[in-house]
Amino acid sequence: MTEQILYENPNLSITYHAEIPCLVIVWRGFTNSQVFREGLEKIFQHMVETKVRKTLTDIREHKGIGIDDQNFAAQKSVEFDQTHWKVKRALIMPKDVFARFAVKNVNAAVNQQDHQDRQMFGDYDSAIAWLKGED
Image (cartoon, rainbow, N blue to C red; front, side, top):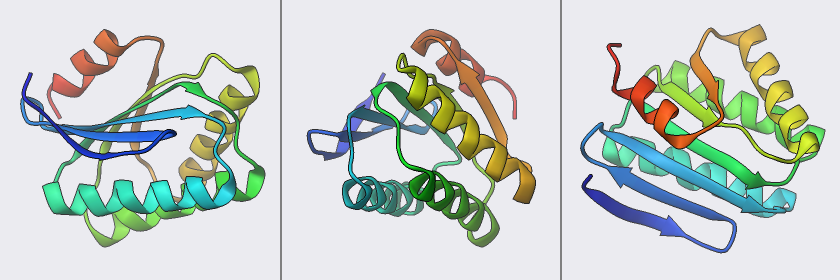
């Protein structure tokens, strides 16, 4: 698979995968509000630059985020879809129970505002297979 690292720091990496095409987003560890929000802005910036319509977000090693950041993530996701284009989103669920709760809260908040094509997975291969499927 052809990959290009677009951004990387200790908590976040964003890689462009040309084969699908999609962005693979990997969150790690605890991120405070500022780091999390700056990371989201980087993700959306690279989505526009690469014009991808699919993302795989691997949050297996990410720790939970606060309710304000959950709401911020949901709102930014909805705004992106309304301003640019709909995105097919695969999420590899976190191991941490509190982080799982945060992901479910974000998804619920998004679903109240906008229907998005989002699926949750337990592993990378299943997520990739789903992203490669017909749109």
